[in-house]
Image 1 (cartoon, rainbow, N blue to C red):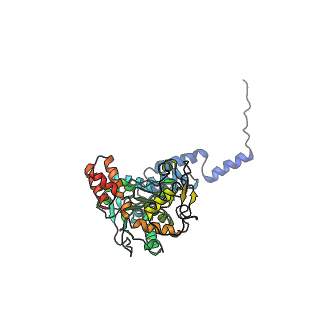
Image 2 (cartoon, rainbow, N blue to C red):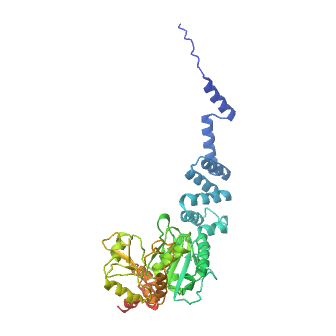
Image 3 (tube, rainbow, N blue to C red):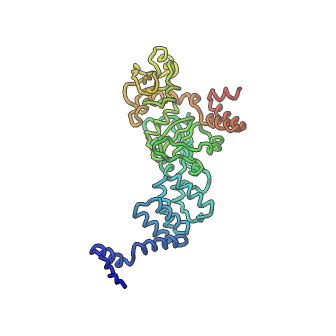
Length: 397
């Protein structure tokens, strides 16, 4: 019989230190893993376990996982879990995505209606009614209402921004003198207006949800303060983020009056606008005497000698555009000072509001796309009532 001497295991000092550390913690790597699995199992039914997991993931910067467990705690009835989930999702995905998630839980009755407080609803724009008009939130110009604008908001941030802009407009030395009025604000549920939250792109909304207001309202332009991203003016709609300044509102409003940007336009827009012989309120698209004479005939502005100055508006094409003043102004940089000539042009444009395309004309186009002919006719009639020639012509066809 052969006797084999047993091997002795050599344990280093560092290994012993690690071993005793686990003993002091009351666990080993295997038991730690078992404990985590047990916690995950408990979190399926116990909100305190879900909150513990969420805080662990948050501490280790596993934000998506933390959001999942905060949501789980919320669905199990923990109000702190819901509050943390809403805040974290807004940070990660924006307010609109958060509003959509919360609305889905309410519709599926995964959350009680009473679980959502008024502050949370206002922040996310989950108003109790689909839309409502807020009394005493408009503005009446002392000089009358040659142009009336309908403000629309979808979340509390937009409402706060409108209040700021309204107050600032009322005391601005130029804007307060214009015959421009604002109706009382219409508040629309954020998940219906659905304004985008991409800071690098123009804000886009589901404008069709405003058809009822456009059909019923006495206004010709919309001002929508909602979402995050780049401001714009198109088709009778001034679109602003809920962080906009008065200077930005003024810039976009000037587009409604016929002003064009004095910085490079996108290629498609430049190719459409930058044609020899054409002009805008603030630009000529060539420097010929004939184009200048046509501009003067249209605008009838009494002023000192004009200073044709090349600008970059038509950079994407071979055509050169010229503004009528030498210095920078709000159409080149929206925070720049307003030249006297541009003030005169704004006043002149508002004396002929029938030249400004009403938003009803654009909504008639949307109705035509849907083959909603009765709606098209009603909207086109409204556009024609503003004196807009193209709407009048369309009704005569």
